[in-house]
Every structure is written in structure tokens, then in C-alpha cells.
Image 1 (cartoon, rainbow, N blue to C red):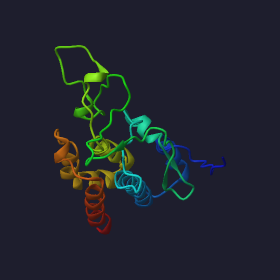
Image 2 (tube, rainbow, N blue to C red):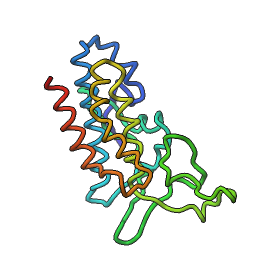
Image 3 (cartoon, rainbow, N blue to C red):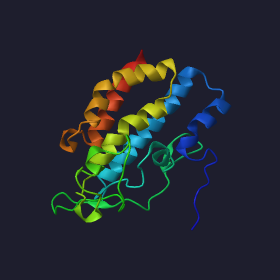
Image 4 (cartoon, helix red, strand yellow):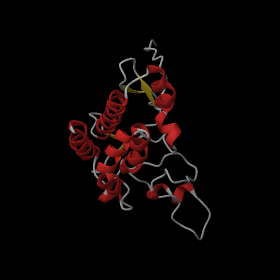
Length: 194
């Protein structure tokens, strides 16, 4: 198998790559916004794929999630690691579990946490879930991509309502990947035009 080599590496290295380019802050935020759009478009494709709804199971912390994407020479994201994309089929009642161990941490969606405090973890009793676990992670990934510049902070402020809806405790209350992308683009266009 032959693949393209991307010398910028994976997205978790973005903060090491950007300073070497000596971009003006207005150019840097455009690059960062483009990477967020690419990330959201990839999620949209995975959740609305011709092969069925796919879930990014190999993404239980921020660094691991970012390492799933490569930065192309033209500063677009390319998905890198496709070995853990189980299929969800809502009509057939087919859901997923990401691995067979107990998951912990702030990056993990509530439905991925062991729900029974009174007994030890048992994989057979762990409830399954759907693609909305990817939506739970969106705010953290987007915040990281946007960085800490004044422009980045402005964009983040515009997205507060979107971030809150992505972090809804009930997965049914979270927006779809398509809705997230649409809302992101609408809000970013308002900020960038100013």
C-alpha cells in the first residue's frame, strides 16, 4: 500500500507547526477555522456515510483524537486512523461500545461511563451507545483547534450555545454533525467578516 506523506504530521502537533510559518494572526485564524471545518466535515461524512453511520471509537482523549487526523501540505485535515469505526444502525437497534474496558475522564461522553455505582464494571452489562459520543467531543476539539489568540477567543464566544448543546447530558438533545457544521459555519462567517 502506498500513501501520501504529510510532513506536518498529525493534528496534535499543530501548535508546533504554526509558529514556524510566521503567519499574521488574521491568516493563522483562517487556517485554524479551516481545520475545524475539515474536522466537522469528516464527522458529518462518518455519521452520514454511504457505508452507514460510523463512530470514532479510537478517540477517548483529546490527544488521541487529534492524532487520528493528519495536516496536509495545504493545511486541510485528512483522516488517518480508520481501524476503530464501528457501525451504528438505528433502525436495526445496532449500537456500539468502544472497547471492552471501563472508560473514565472529562472527554468521555456520559453514556460511555459505567452507570452502576453499586457494582464493579462488567462489559456484558455496559449499555451501548451511538454516534452522539462524537458530538460530545466536538467543543473540546474545536476549542483546541481555534487556539488562544484574540480572534480565536472571539470565535469561541460566538459558539458558546453550540458548545452547550453538544454537551447535553442526554445524547438525543445533541445536534447532528450536519447541524454542528452548519451552525459553526454561520457563526464563523459573522466573526470573520467583521
